[in-house]
Amino acid sequence: MSSLKQSLDQKLLHKLSPQQIQFIKLLQLNTFELEQKIEEELLENPGIETNDEFEEEDKEVGENEITSIDDDLKVTSELEPPKKEEDIDSYDDQGEAEEYAEKEEELFDISDYTSDDGDEDGFHLYEESDNQDEERKEMPIAVSSTFHETLIEQFEAIAKNEKELLLGLQIIGSLDDDGYLHRGIDAIVNDLLFGQNIETDVVELEKILHKIQQLDPAGIAARNLQECLLLQLQRKDAKDEHVALATKIIKNYCDEFVKKHYDKLCKSLKITEEHLKKAIEVIVKLTPKPGEQEFNTKSNYIIPDFTVINNNGHIEVTLNSRNMPDLRVSRSYMDTLKSYEKNPTNNKQIKDSVQFIKQKIDSAKWFIDSIRQRQETLLKTMKAIVAHQKKFFLDGEEVSLRPMILKNIADAISMDISTISRVANSKFVETEFGTFSLKFFFSEGVANEDGEEVSNKEIKKILSNCIEAENKSKPLPDEALMEILKEKGYNIARRTVAKYREQLGIPVARLRKEMK
Image 1 (cartoon, rainbow, N blue to C red):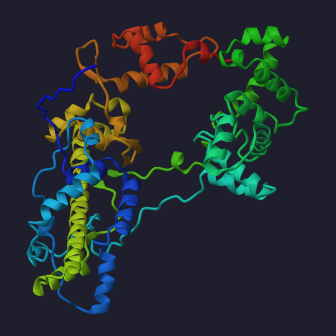
Image 2: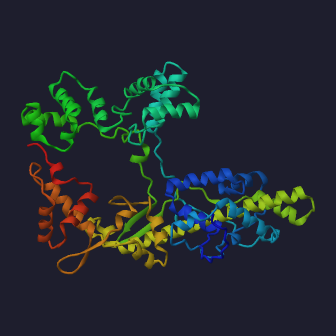
Image 3: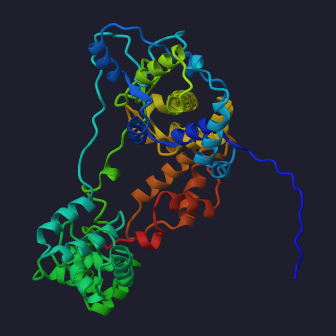
């Protein structure tokens, strides 16, 4: 039996303040997610309000004195993001926030919250135009149903009773974003029993699943690609010989079709290449991911976070904040603290109320300050990207992109690489040449025969053009693509060609082969 021992260890830990954690989380959000976060904060924290609310109050109470809190919102220390992602996980938001509040309670001074110095405009997320007559316009947001919501509406119309509806909703809720049902029927039976106390069996659920598979879009709720394609073929004219052949191929020779073993298919089915070609034309028109259609809002609509405009050779960068309100600390809360400052009391209930107000004001200040820092960091990063890739923003040619990694931008604006990574994640920029992900502008460098370093995007563009122009009956293997690149002055290995081809989402030569 081992004995218990005590030991003293020294550890160096990187602890983050609540403000730092909040700033990091906000930095990772895109414009749409930030709008949702602001709405949540306005609902959860009564200590924060919008200027619109403020203007409504002014109409009711008249031209009263407004307490300024701008000085209180100034950054007291630089919030330097951590260099490692695991630093975030080591922080307990609620626990440390409570501990912080307890320490601050003893130092609580009402005058710190009721200072009348400074600007009274608060913080504006929306940059006003120089032209005062210009109308402030909101960025339109597409509104439509997800395919899950569409399926629920359809199934509600055909469900025979309440139990059937509950079973159907459970299956629909188990579908992934592509519209497939990867969770086993047995597992769903258990989910219903333990989660909703509904008894059912595999046979009953299979019948419900079959009903769901008859809904639109065709191919929905399939358990694999083969079933998805067969469900779509069932809705076509079975008397059509090409549809019948396509169904036979998918049902009995799916593996051979996927691997494009066309000679083997012709031999096994005893058909000509012309017949096979007609059947393949039917199959390629089917949808392998029925969930990714017009029903999925997220996959077909992007709200750009930045706008870049070429103004006679001068690149202008603006941050999209048009749908976001201007925020400030609640005036009513500030007035309450003022009243307490003038008439202090020893009443415990009043003191607790004042402490609650103080905590909500602190939370509001931190949130507004984090929003401000997020906007400043995003603009600073985007301007550095534009400066590095100025040629692209002038001509829009992909070959104009220069090699650029996260470290290049981090060094240019004296920030940590992890900060740049968070900014680049899920952010988009709108240009006159289209809308691009920020990750699009980052690429590794490759040296050409002149020793000049060029972006690997230029190599990928050449590869894509070569494959697009190839003879589809005899597609180019990676070795042939490597030789073409060497002739153009790019001496790269075959495995690098394969890596770039895979990054472009292009299959190997055998799988690119098409019938004549």
